Image (tube, rainbow, N blue to C red; front, side, top):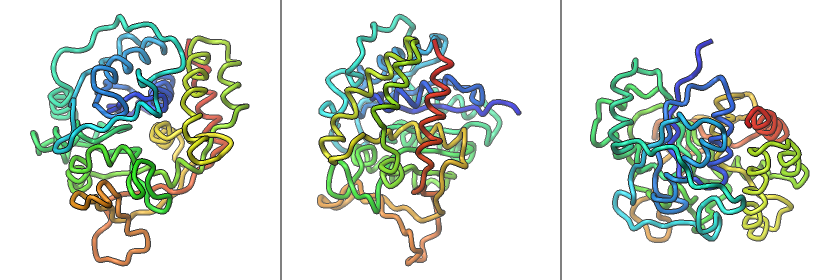
Length: 313
C-alpha cells in the first residue's frame, strides 16, 4: 500500500518531538513537510526545534516552514513552565544546520493541497490551529481537498489543563479552532480524556535510553525533563504523552476507541474560553463534526513508540 501523505503542523515541545520522530521512523507515511506555529514556545523556537528533531532523526531533507507567530485574535500564551525555555529542554541538541524553507507555512499548505489530488493529504496537528485556520480562511477551496485532520487538543470529561475548562492547544487560539471545527473537514480529536489514560513509566523512558542510539538518548532526556511537570501537577507516577497519539492513531487505529460527536469551541466567555464543548450523549440536535477519542491501549501505544524509535540513528 502506498504511504499516506501527511503534513505535521506543530509547536515543538517534547511531546511534539516524540510524535515527529514516530512519524519519521514509519514507512507508512510520506511526510511532505513540517509547519511550525507559535504555541508551546514562540515561533522562532518552534521552527528551530522542528529542524533539530529532523536532524536528530537523520532526516535533514524534510521540509520545515515557519508559520503564524501569534493567534488570530488573542495575544500569544506559551508554556515554558512545562517545556523549558527552549521548548525542548532536557538534551543538549545542536543548533540546526538544515535550512528553514523560504515562504510562509500557510502559503505552502495552500499550494500543496491545491497541487495534490483531492483527499490525498492528511493534516496532523499537534499545536494551536492557527496555521490551519489561516489557510482555510485565505483559500476556502482547499477545505474539501483535505482528507482528514487528526489533532491533539481539547478536553471534556478530563476538563482543562491550562484553565479549569480549556486544554492548552485550543486555549491558545480558540478562534482558529472554531474555524477548523466548523469547516466541514473530517476530524479526529485526541483530547486529554485519552492522553491522560496513557502515562509514561520510568521503565519505559529507561527503555528508550537503553536503545543506545542518539535518538533514544535524546528522547529519554526530553521526557525526563517533560514528565516532571505533570507528575507534580496531577500527583501521578508518570506523565502523559499527548501528541504522539495523533501519529499512533494513523499507524494503529485499533489501539484507540471513541465516538462521533458534535464539538463546539467556546470563544466568548472569559470563564470558559477555549473549552471544547463535546455533545457526548447526543443531547442537542447539532450534527456530529468530529470523531472524539476517549480510550487507548496504553501498553500497545508505548510499545509502538519504542519499537519505531529503535529504527532511528
